[in-house]
Amino acid sequence: MASPAPQSLTSTGVALTFNAAANGDKVPPGSILVVKNASGGAITVTLVTALVLDGDLTVLDRTSASVAATTGINGIRVPNNEVYRDPADGLVTINFSATASVTYAVIS
Image (tube, rainbow, N blue to C red; front, side, top):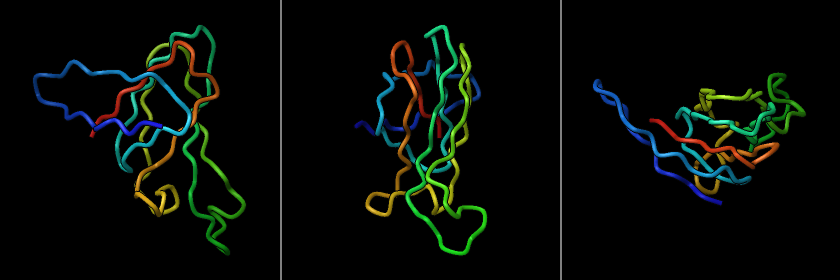
């Protein structure tokens, strides 16, 4: 499990550093994931919901928020709310349906 530091964008651009995808990696809430999928098939990126809030119909019985990542490059905004933050470290856990030929960068 890795927690790569978010990279800052500038007005002149930046060469992003991509990390190998691994289940259980953690990213800061409110960041943007840039997922590069070179596997040749669509994958699913799952943002794990750390909390289950009883009575809140928006999160009741939910265990994760899945986002499809087609081949190529995909941008995913990580929600900045308590439902996704792990109470132990304040980060959001991400999982991938496949990790071969999949990399990602984190942007603040």
